[in-house]
Length: 399
Length: 162
Picture 1 (spheres, rainbow over the protein chains, first blue to last red):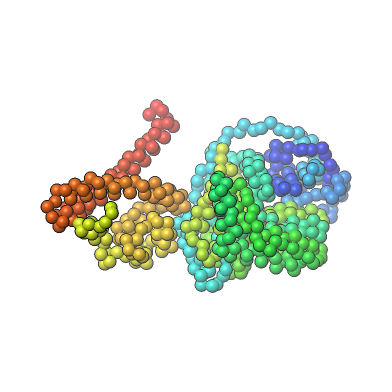
Picture 2: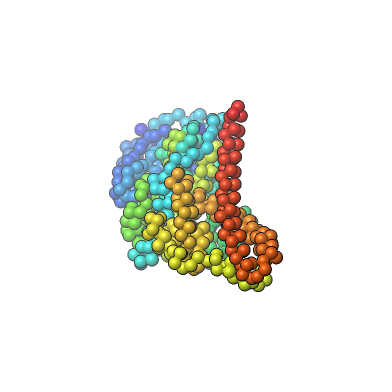
């Protein structure tokens, strides 16, 4: 088969034709149509390597024609949070529309027809409904007890931090419109990574790793505060977050876990010494930004494997936290809190953590939200934090 | 009230249950089977108010159980807590005003009619004991009426032929 990548005049209507695959980040945008290859790497910590090997193997049998410098086929994937849950996938679309900076390009596999995709389509007038509550894997009154049980483990000194999540199922009288959801998310959170991979839709603020050549970047977000419509109060909330001991206790293990992994793979690694404030539409976070130069030829997916799960979604120490999550959460996270992103044939790529997301399946959806627990956390505050996060997603899903 | 009169002291005493009648959260959890973390959260949120530090009135158990009945009926706890916080905030000034009304119209009038401090104290305690449950009844049945009216309004709006 022949895989052809070429530049086209932009802008392209990425979302108009209801792509099955979407990735929108500040620097990149991808929209994928049809499936040329679908890789299921199975379970286990090596699922990342197996996915990459399968992608490279598949590419080996293709004839690659690149008329776009640095272009070529891209695989977009999402991986389960738990190494032993099934559902990890990497997909190579038959047609990919892409943007890098101001350049627009198209990749086709085996001469797939891409012409109709270049033209804007009229806006849909599909009927809409609202997200309707269907229940949770664990009623939140029991989730509160689970949070208290986790905090007791922290108080007893068995771990420093654990992230507990809960899910929230919704349904609708008509299928959810993923296109509208993606538009809303990318407009409301332009600084986030908006994604759609096999029904998993979301807008994540958290860059797990970006690799271009030998350069890598990563951003750790942990510790957060609500925002206020009143600018003076908003500024106060920001200052309070920067000064909050509890939030620093939540942030530091997350930053440390990423620093350790990256330092091991890099010849040079820089980061801000003190966490800085990152402000999104509905929430603000403490952030540590890393940038570095790799000491060897590590692929983006190899780095993902080493980084996942960071303390921003698991805890510290990791293994104790994962055991506790398994014992207390009462659900399978699926691909929530797992890596989501893309990779190319050079092993470059951009991977985020699938937070602020929903698993869409026709007229049903499963939403997720989590909260990081450290000494000093209060169960009712964590319940409220997840409630507010779930509301934001329901709002984005609304008619 | 600028200073505590003798009869106010009697009223205050009757408001405070004796220690034997209060219970700790631990005791409340073990007698009701309601989870300790939930009771602690309710206390921190100001939805369970201790009579004396760390000691709660056994009658509060009924309110917690009523809340749990709503959760069992399907309301998520998180949403219910948020509503409870707002109700609590909205009711606080109303409660202050009601106490003020009691002071102006009951306390002062009882005092005017009484012939001795003991009689004032007695009259106040009796009035308070009769009026507190009445106030509770008034608020709860009014809220039930509002709930029904709102539900009816929505159902009718959905089908005006009814």
